[in-house]
Length: 75
Image 1 (spheres, rainbow, N blue to C red):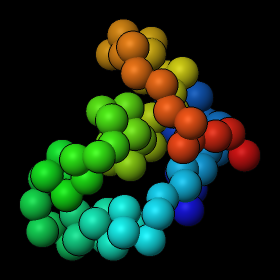
Image 2: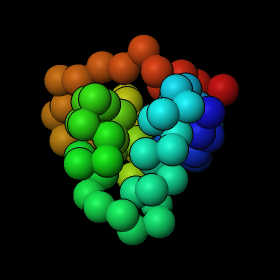
Image 3: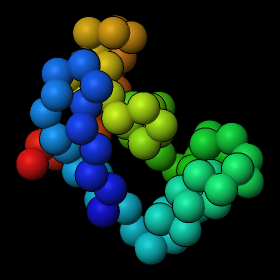
Image 4: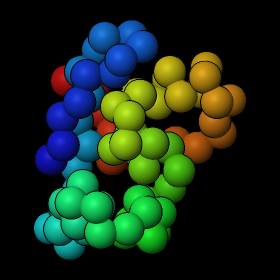
């Protein structure tokens, strides 16, 4: 599980990752490639959350994102 505070609205959100996804996320954080290459199975909203912490609602406002995620939930 990855917990982040949205820099726009200030609310806390958690994203559930599988063990394999968590390993890939850690590799991305260590600089082992682009997030879309390390985590191709996640949609752009999920990857943006991991990169920046922007929650789904704020991403919809900022980027007009049409994606959704059942992996990200508010704490």
